[in-house]
Image (cartoon, rainbow, N blue to C red; front, side, top):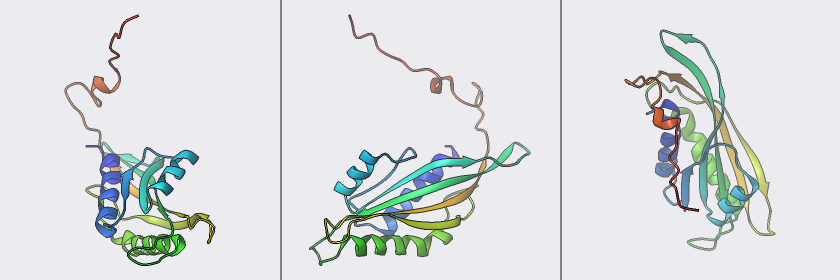
Length: 168
């Protein structure tokens, strides 16, 4: 499996372990659209993990070292059960737990600990509707080793798709 796929899956797994009460925690293909952010709010509390950018690096001995820009968007809304908690407070607690653990997480072989960790408030509605969105972002140094097969670096099945003939 690709180190980048491992990285993203490992982040999702770690968040599920740290915050088991989330309604949704899943990988996301990269940048988030406005509609996707709205959907996250509906499924709050939630976390969504993307890898929207890669920075190239040096190659040596068949290994390329890159930096993967990772982002996790946390969402929460006002709650009344099991206790009354504002969306702002809920998301800040989630972000705090994740930020405290993030520097020590091990995301897999060839993936170094996170660096350049930051968190940003994306949306805070206050008491109006109690919605809060925060993003935690960082870079993870990753060593990429080509996965060679008899067919080459990538299977030809990745290049071609099959579209069935469904008629006139």
